[in-house]
Amino acid sequence: MTKNRIGVFCAASERIDPLYMEKAEELGAWIGSQGKWLVYGGSNLGLMEATAKAVKANGGQVMGVVPTLLEERGRVSTLLDVIFPTVNLSDRKDLMLQEADILVALPGGIGTLDEIFHVLAAGSLGYHDKQVILYNVDGFWNGLLEFLHGLEARQFIHHPLKERLKVADTFEQLVSYLTD
Image (cartoon, rainbow, N blue to C red; front, side, top):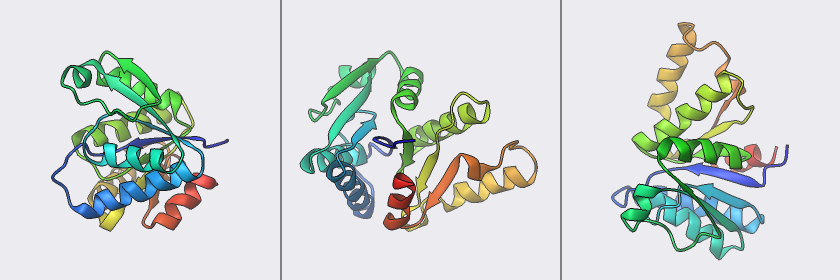
């Protein structure tokens, strides 16, 4: 499977550790330099905008999947090459999943968790065979991974997590998953 459209889930917060911004920019620069598309939520805030700026600065294309509420609040990035308007967050998740070849979760909050679980749940039911890569910057996802492995050990997860979920602790590991 070619991985030319990289879906990215991440924080829209501006108040987070600058390390996360640096890692978002590094990923965006790689996506752009490889001539790939960024598929993301289309916001002009936080890690979303940092990733999109780096993609554009390095020659890539940006696809924003934008809920109406984001547009009404003036929070849509001006960097978008393609805009897919959506009615709500549920539509946004479905469209991002449809348009992306693979998905990467940078550090994020409730919305990012929702997106990760949406992809994992849909995959476990056979709606798709796409993977989510958790970019575990500075151990950000360790608590979630511990929880998920506990669910798996207790038989609450019916398909091995490793089929749908990869963890990249370094940028090099992330790139290797994106180029497999």
